[in-house]
Length: 440
Image (cartoon, rainbow, N blue to C red; front, top):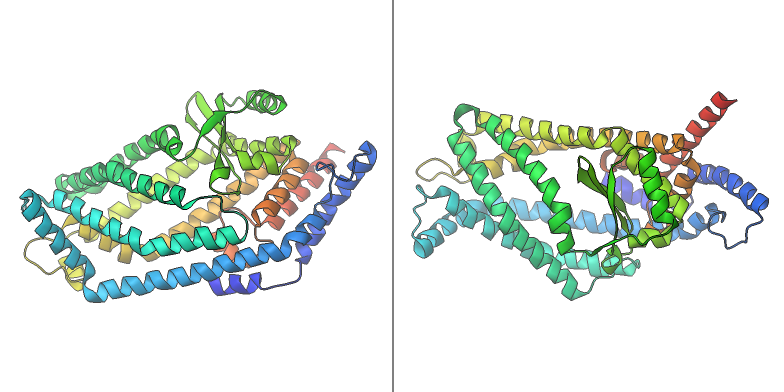
């Protein structure tokens, strides 16, 4: 699929289907421009097709650089995994962790398996951070900078890395310790208790991430008073969305990519706009984009996604319970020492080998559901009479973010959680035409 996508990025001709679709949108914009006698520089009526064509080469170049880098990175990851497997890397690190635990803290590997497991995970995490660092640096300071997106300094980059590592140890350590303890104490049906634990932990993370963790990396300031703020609150009231706070996030200090998202439980909902989004699209287009996002909430997509994730956890740990005591599996990977295989090793080998192909299939299924949700949210925005502005907003975001304009259909079907631009525009235009006929 990567090879097909690379071939798609090498095309030099602007896709005809996208050209025809955007040209139809421009016809409507030209009518509005003529009726309102707007200036040529008025962004609300400026033709979109010439802008997309002007950015097509840049978009293809950006995509080609990313797919080349992704293929090289994936090849290295596979090579590293095979080498580590053949050299017995995991058994070696476990033995080393047990040795350090015994000499530094007086820990017996059999009696204090969970503590040794935390040392083991810390070592694995640090090694993974080091081996992935060159790829992260190249992606950020070569590819993203080359195409005008990166705004980070090296200081900010490494500061983010240190914060992420600290959070991994502070939150991940207790999480893993509790997970291992539940598996050990849960008996034959431990997967049920693990499932309940994962549910509680998911809710916990959904609560603390936007309130406590994300502010460690970005600044969130209230949206200034004005027409945009008034319009957003009016839209929320119209849809009975209990909006309590409206923020602007300084995404521009890291990247010029743009986004918007919502979070919160019950009657305490919040909306966050990237500052980059506010400079890339007009106020009416921001409202249409938020109409799309609020459609996800109104149509219960967030709840359905959460439930799907919980079902995924339940299924994965149930099947883990079926092979948890399979010592033959662990011996095949070099864990043939005295005593039972450590639980953390059993988990890692299971998710990296037996569950990995299943995960690919389930991920594709989830992607299909997510894409259907995107079409439904687009439809919701159209039914709010915001379709035209959502179409132009999506085109502008594609322009500013150099989104793929001619993706390979197989690649996009498997990898894209959001349908390609031309599919979304075509679906909205067909819906508008259908609604127009019903009105007549």
